[in-house]
Image (cartoon, rainbow, N blue to C red; front, side, top):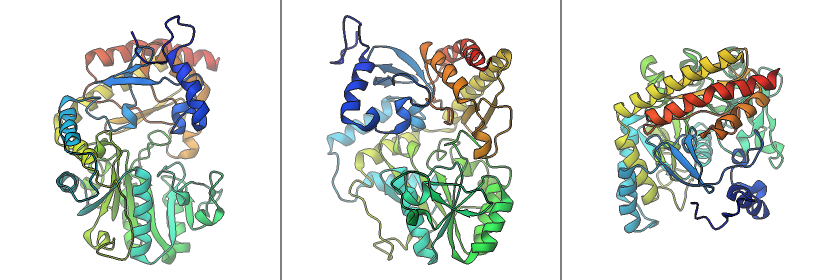
Length: 444
């Protein structure tokens, strides 16, 4: 029986509903990150009391197979015993020192061993990582213009919360109230996977462009893989024009593959980014992130160079211990298992939606995938925007009612873990036919 203090033994008010009412009285929207509010799908968000392996348990005592995995970090599943053991030992030694520590050195070494970077600097969130990488790029190049792509999300940095204009290369306008035009007036927003737009932008603004930043494989509008050679083209265009190429691997890093998205394209194609941002998996479920790159660029950071960046909790010993334990346990066998489980789920989703007559596209990179309820291939944000959000809401709630927790938005990535065993995958597969029929009914 649930032990949460809000549990109503008479069953008149579910504990999640009661907690949501309390939360809305003291927190904007009742949540601390917008997608958690279920606004995109409707209904009451589930307040989770605990998680273990592939499963979530809410405050009402309901169990769900988890397909968000904390939006990516839980590659090994929840509460992995070896990660918990390492974290417990770290906590026993103290939670924060404000000094250099051994775990941050070891985690930096592990990241450098896997990723195309020579040095890294730790921060506490993906937003901090991208913000700092852009500041460093501007400081290194002495330029001011930044290029990003419509639909790519790089955290809530003012300069990157911008929407695209109608032209191929258009200076951005703020995408949210509270961001002044002056914060985005040096940001160019281009259509993703559009080489002509990139070429035009560099022809017009080349000597002003400090950097181009892109999600290594966009996952924040659903998975929209880079077309073959697109990232290589971006890297070469930046190099030719004296700009820095920033690959945002906050989501894909150590999740899409052992070496992130770069392990799926750059390693084979023979190019490396100038700067890379990391988060999620590298923190093992704790608030930790990093940015890294070539030593000559990274050494422009204070205290070696003039570009200032700092953080009280950067390199926190508990967070870096969790990240280090996770990376050490993330073996080739782990990635093979997650990939196999994802293939099974993708195949079952396609079969169920096809049988129900629901148009769809399933797109993936490495172990990550997403489901678009649309009849067109999705290669950019405009294509992603054609997904049927109403049908997805029906699909989502049917799965939730059957004990499967999907992303509560049609524009998010589905994640599995090495803890998704035959039982967990079986429950997902069994729930899909009814969910597909629910989506089909909405479309009739």
